[in-house]
Length: 60
Figure 1 (cartoon, one colour):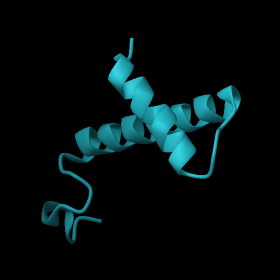
Figure 2: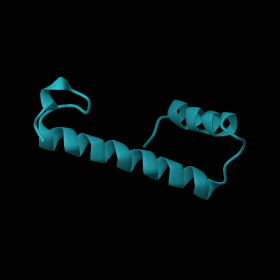
Figure 3: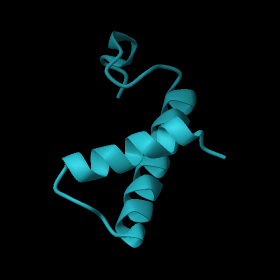
Figure 4: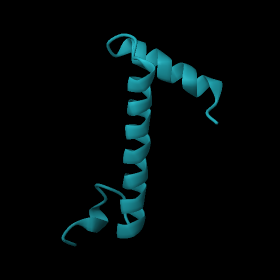
């Protein structure tokens, strides 16, 4: 469950970035953000270093 403060911030940001989003649009944006973060974390774990880390230079 998301804390109330997080939900309030999401709604506030939605209004600040072009007006009110419908429930489906907000859900789509949240889903996209969660999936992107999960994929980034998976790549970091798989490669053994963070995105942009100099440890990856010349490794592929």
